[in-house]
Image 1 (tube, rainbow, N blue to C red):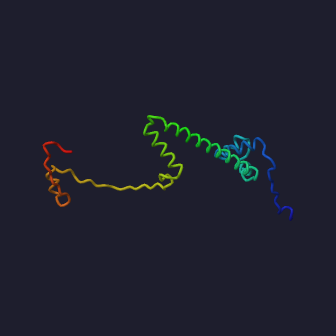
Image 2: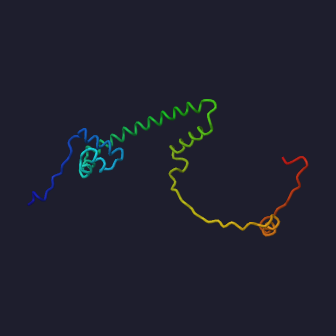
Image 3: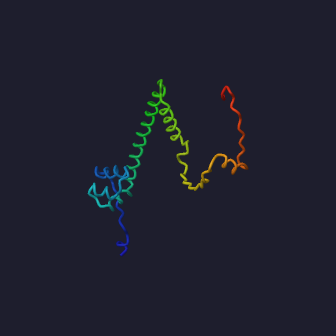
Length: 155
């Protein structure tokens, strides 16, 4: 009876090329059902693979490789951008875009701020018959003093 109560824990000893394919798909965010279909596995087996230490380690390595490539791409992009900005006649849009991208990369500009939606209703007053009528209705709020225009024009 005790032997039946114990469960055997299986652990993957090495990754086959097919297992590496599963890892590559997992790293790309593909769901387990699609991975199972593409690789000829059951979805439960893909889940089991995800829990294996070898698979977790390989996914971590894949992430590190991708991160290294992205960092080098960013560095090269910055170098190209510096070259472009040093040239005469750089457009304002390019300069502002470069500043915006750099600011976001450094965490400036509020790109991490939560978005809030505020809704309100503004009731506009009815149209006045004339400016004199409007002025008479709002004389307590608006004080207008007309200044004579100079003959030479305004400066």
